[in-house]
Image (cartoon, rainbow, N blue to C red):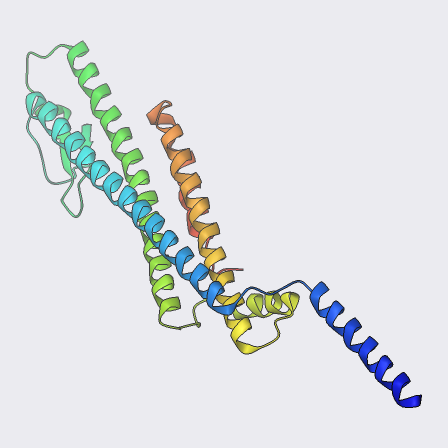
Length: 247
């Protein structure tokens, strides 16, 4: 009788244990997790390459516009008078042509302007020259934004490549350890999968932010282009600050 009761007790315990196991949420297979991570990596890499191309193309366009502005300034000034390549503080300056790259500034003094030009002609020429200067300054700010975006995209592509090679050294380890503790990972393989997924999420979060910046830039340039310099600088600063390696 005691044997029967013992058998029934063990059987009951076995059934209860089996029922408890069935009620536990099933964990995804590790191979499936790895496949999902690989898919996410490929999708992120594609978006990053597209965003990188966008920034490179816009930088090239801005560089060409700066060259065009500079060329038009030189054309206007050649009609006005003779250039001087030395600064003469004692002489009254009409306009200073700012250099491109490391080129020397070109000075146009009142004494060297051609005779026979009306005051209205000179005033309108000066207005155009100053407007081109403003455009060049704004284009320079845009180029800094595009370069910052390119730098960030290239770093994230390198991070993705490092993840593929198993290099786990690039990110903030302390934040990742805290994340793992919250997830209560059970073994090293599971920890590695969770950690890798978290790093992908950081990259995706930064990329989404940068795509928002690109959209904000597209909206800005629809407005008065000569008045958006501060907003362009703010966008560049935000891109610089948004980095998975920063706290």
